[in-house]
Amino acid sequence: MQTKVWVGLWVLMSLLCAGWAEPSAANGKSSPDTVILTVKSSPSADWESKLELSFKGLKSAIRGATRLDALQLPVTDRYLTITSGRRDEVFRVGQDGRVYDAETGQQLQLSDKWTAKLKRYADGLAEQHYGQLVEWAEARNSVKLKNIVTVMDLETGLQFRAQRRAGRHHADVQPVTREDTKIMKRIYNNQWSWKRRAILVRQEDKLFAASMHGMPHGGDGIPDNGFSGHFCIHFLNSVTHGSKAKDPEHQLMVHKASGRLNEYVRGLDPIELVDSFIAAVHLQQHYMLGLFVDNTQSSFFHKLQEEVRTVHSLRQISKSKPGETKKEEALWAIELPVEVQLEREGRKAIRKKLVFGLHKDAAGSWVITEIQGLGESPKGSKKKSILKNKGD
Image (cartoon, rainbow, N blue to C red; front, side, top):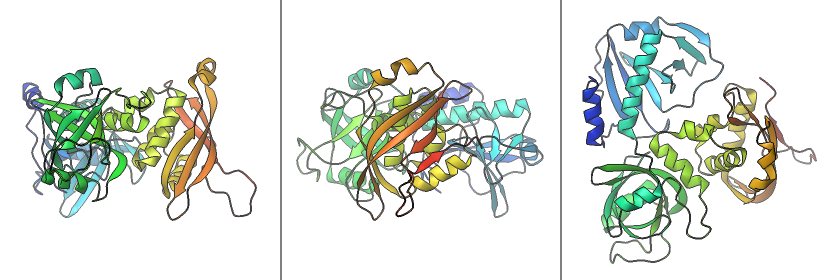
């Protein structure tokens, strides 16, 4: 997998000031005590940032660590790789620096020293990899009308130039040339789409976390660029021009582009959590789903993964209003009914009523414990399909 570099100078300076080695791409040769730390926005992302950690004793500490069954495997963007001959051992690194073997479902019991060091270096590499999370009010002052910016897709690493042409509540932009349009279309597998994607927007020395869709629409303005219309870029808390409301899919992708997806999901209220879950399923961001439950080792979560694997589209038709749950938010459990349009691969779209069961976990964050109506009931059965956490 190719490593691509697109970083801000201030990040490199911070690494050097902290006494860190400058990141370098893995060359297939590692010293006996070298481990490769990787940050990438999803397990399948082509664009990644790597750092070789040449600490004496780290490899032996990892291989000799006591292993315990993990109650929860973290949803993470951080990995450690140890290469021995032709075999790679890949471990997950949590936001707290703890190390996990996803294949065995175990946590490696490393010393506090190693855990703290891995967290420091992973945090630094993540700062290099992602964009700044800034409010639309600030972003619009940097990305002014007629400014040309560089847009980079966080999954593929593909870059193209775009010009902001309009947009009061978010940026309406267009690719600058035909070549820029071709690159943008490659990001969407050569088919224009409304699906949101996490992107980085570079304006001079600033690198912003943002989200775009890939569908030409509305007014045009740049002749002969092969793009009929404009597309939209959203930043933190920007809203749509029509409803003047935040788009859950865009906000999910903005936080993905900032590297702060975990804390974002953990801070959502019940309605926002359900909105974001539906957004993640619709965008086929299946690796995110572990953020919405309290136990990624449970049978509920494994069944949930199976059910959403064939979902091609999931959109809300109606949802609960904030006022309906305001008094109940102080409680530990709640149910939220949502009417959706669900389309599975190779099938027609259907309307369904989903009822989400949620409760607060030990940390006080809302998590999904049950979804009525999402699973497929057997043919001829009048019984409602229920995905439920049975406490396992």
